[in-house]
Length: 362
Image (cartoon, rainbow, N blue to C red; front, side):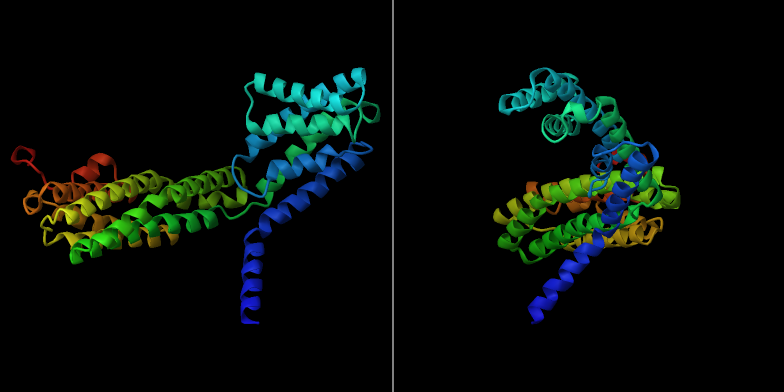
């Protein structure tokens, strides 16, 4: 009974997370049919609600371009289908030929996947359910245009919260970064080769979460650009945009750090005494960055925490380890710079926080 309740709760939460896209699609489909059928006067405006739903989609991102691609794809499919089916009729080989020619036309126009697939599906509909005698190609193209525009309008007037997905994906990425730094700190502190190997394996899985984070920011930026009621969220999204690339670099540098730490432990190299504490401080910096971004604040505390670690990464620290540990120290410096940039500093300002490695740099 408890397991059933937990499963029901999980499914309800999933439904709530997708509630806004579902409402958008339902509303857009109804409005598109009403406009095409009751206002414009088309008898069976099949393509209008279909175009509205596809242009919205359940996922976010690039809706304006998708709506345009949809209209173009429908136009190609309908045009090719209407011309050919009116000449060669409907049947097995005719449908195969219509689909092949519609998709080939879309590919020759150097079109995206949405256009190619929509051209294929539209040509199939024309060849089967909606033969040319029932409606003109121009009518269907107009229905597709109505649906695409309605979908875009609904997305602008009834938008999702652009920060919700950014917060969720940002938390995953920054959590992975903090866990990796904390894991390496523990591994080098205890000289645990197995732990270091596990940390490296987990860190290598973080690439997908970075891609999802970037996609979330792209979708959020689009919503904030076109939806008037979300314009006030632009500043919060800008902070995430500023942090995205440096955080990606920090994750890459952390993977290098974990790999060299593993090699150093296997070779039984000495561990610089301040190193575990510095790695823990970097992990704490990432947590501060995550929390400040989520709260809509400028990440000033994270900036000062990263600056503190940067100041400790001195040339003397390099002298306490052999080759692999020296690389680890250099990666600590790089990650500190990445986090300073994620807090809003330029690269020049971030690098200036590092102590020089050579006397003539002072």
